[in-house]
Structures are given as structure tokens and as C-alpha cells.
Image (cartoon, rainbow, N blue to C red; front, side):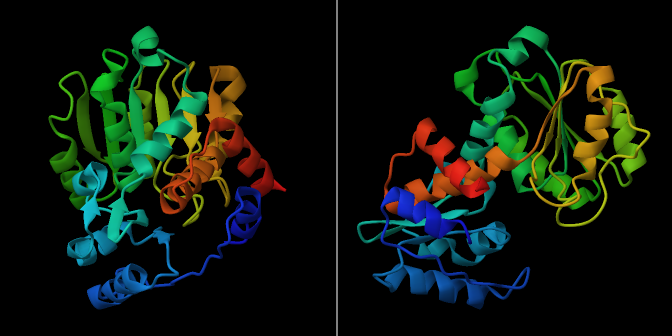
Length: 286
């Protein structure tokens, strides 16, 4: 919210940002009222949706003239925009998470090393990454084994419904791990050259880490903490082992930047290339 005016100045946008705050899982009528306002107010060009992506989709999908395939597949909306008189809903996470992954995962990594992927958490970010990894355009350069580990069973069942059969080259496993010690055991089963992602929210939305301090990361692996602010205990655990186990540890800054710029591009119909993303990142850090 604070950085948007600086970005608007850089992009030459005559626009300001206003927030709508809701309690988690608010009544459907509240979401519908806001979407109706955006749809009919000529001065409202669109919105970035954060915590309420799934609830808004469930409450308001009939109010949209267009929903992109990712929104329909994931059952969520993260971007609201307009094209002429049409109200459009997009799920941008598969794109923004993919761009963030391409920032630090080497080209042909999966074909070269055949490592595993462990996604800690089975929420929207893990589903988005799973969709990204499973695209046919990657051919054989896909992780052959993706594990989603989560504390609660319903999220895992919902993930299975979405991901099962997505790509015959990718085996998905859905693992119920109620405790960090359970996650440690799953972590210990991974091959070298794997990718481990903290998509639980722990370390940002709540204290702690999905792993214990006794965990051991697989050697020569990539570790991604998708948050960029907060306690970030998971990231610190990985950094302690980075030298001895040859880990590359990444934070969530570039994910944050891509998440915002994807929506800005959609709302304002602006092409945003790598050079501009780097410029906007520098502005946000300043």
C-alpha cells in the first residue's frame, strides 16, 4: 500500500490505491457488495485480492464476465480488472510463483538432476506452484515427484482433487504431517538437488517454522521461504546448513514483486518487462 504511489509515479499512472478490509471468511454479501462497486464505478479500475481469494471466488464468480483458466482450476481470484465493460477475474499466482522460481531455479534443473519438490503447506501458493511445474510446455524438464505436506487433512483432499492426473510425468503425494517433527521425516526422505518450499505462512502470519531445529536438508538443494518479512525461522534454519550442505536459500521478495506487478499489468493494461520489474523492485526497497 505504501509503495504503490511511488510505483504509480514511475509508471506514469494517474491512480491511487484504496483498501477494503475484511475479517477472514466474511459473509458472501460483503464480498459481493465490493465486487459490485468495482464493476459499476467508472473510477475503479480493478483490485489485487490477498487473503480472501477463495472466499471471493465462491461468493462472486457469477458477477464476473470472464474468469481465466487458472481462476477456474484453483477456485480463486487474485486480480480483478476490466476490459471494456467486462469484469475479469484472474488467478495470477501460477504465473507470479513461476516467474519467482525461474529467478533462482537453474534452467533444465529437473531434467539434469531429477530432484524432488517438497511443498510445506497445501494452500493456494502450493497449488499454484504445482500447476506451474506441471505444464506440458516443459516437456521432460519437470519434477517427477512433488510432495504436498500439510497439518490438516481437508486441505490435502482438496489439493488432490485439483492436482491428481494433471501431468502423467509428475507424481503427486499428499502427506498428512500434523507436527514439525513429521515434516522433518519427510524432508529426510528427499533426494539431493531437491526444492523445499515453506508455503505454510509460519514465520510471517504466525510464529515458528514447519520444521524443527533438528531437521536436515538434502544436500545440493534449493530452499525457498516465500515470505520476505517476519520472523522467517525456516529461512534461518536453512541458512545455518547452507555451507555444510551446499544449499541455495531464497526469500520471498521477488515473489512479492511479481505478485504485485502481474496485477498492475492486468489492471492498467501495461506491459512490464524484466528491466521495469528490477526498477520497481529497487523503488520498493528504497
